Image 1 (cartoon, rainbow over the protein chains, first blue to last red):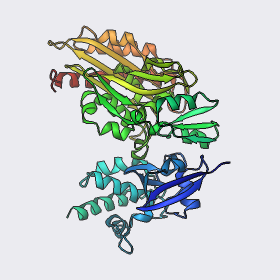
Image 2 (cartoon, each protein chain N blue to C red):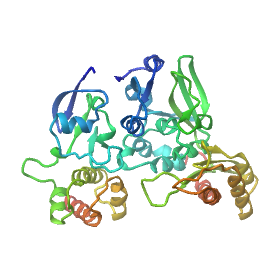
Image 3 (tube, one colour):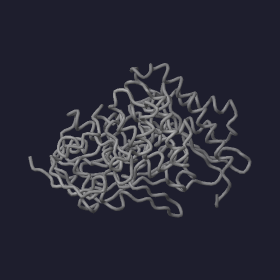
Image 4 (cartoon, helix red, strand yellow):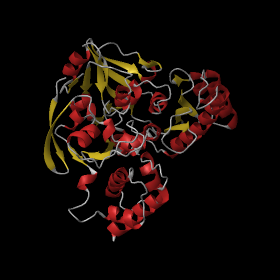
Length: 157
Length: 289
């Protein structure tokens, strides 16, 4: 099958890759670009473990084709920390122990970051609704919500 | 499978006229079906690079929404949210924040689920689809697009260019409600959209009522609307509209609800949605809102 040549931007860096048309962006990130922070959970857009930003929009990378990333900007969990400097959300997830097995964590962090960029002072209800598309099979939602609210408060301060 | 990104409507029509070509807009239904092997298209035609498919135009009598506009973009549009809160709320009920970032109005319609949340709200709003195809363009009321589960009245090579909403009239309001057993991320057991206009005395002069998930396709229920017209939406009128709604239902039994339950809930939701639409109509000042 013919491969498509795709030029895109990932975490601010120009990236080129070859992919087959049916490969999802998640497949490309994980299997071809070794960016394995985005996780594969359901592959149907229900669990949010593969969440990335595409041109500033929160999306499930399992519901985006790799070829669709052409000439667009992708942000993944690998771009969240600045070197050794964790993003406040990442620090607060650690402080609040807002993770158990950790598979859902990258998706929650990306989704929470998108929320705080849009709404720096969300209520608990707003956090819970925004994150409704991120599933934690360990069911540690309460600590996740607290960590997001605490990170929001710190970023606002 | 080929992937094509036409830059114009004409180029998209040519590509869609080839065998087994499918439209890709937000992909939130299509990619799931593709992965599950339920569809095996020869060509995916990504319509998002056609400029007019991603634009919203406000005209004096019409709001033209490109078929590939996402739910997130729709929800951020101040005028549409103000004039058609029921349509916007209905679309925003679909999936998660992530799905909203991609899912399109045209896609929710053409995926042709009987339970598609945006469709009863669009039907209640008297929305019209502008369709492009090998024979040129044509306009079709939204209620004539879905013909059954997964089936539409679109002909080979045709695709939806835009969804057109009328500018909402003064003293008018719309609402959409759905029942799901939880608060988010589920498929409607029943959905009900209501849109109505009042005169200066608060009497309903025009109404449209639509139901989802209670028949093989979303329904426009003229009898329910007729029960509201000429009334102030008193309890008797609301009960008559509910009875007409129940009467129109031809639901199936499935894991989401039984036939009896769906029929009963359809009546309840029509009453509740009509009350919300009434409140909105009462709050909307004449032109210049």
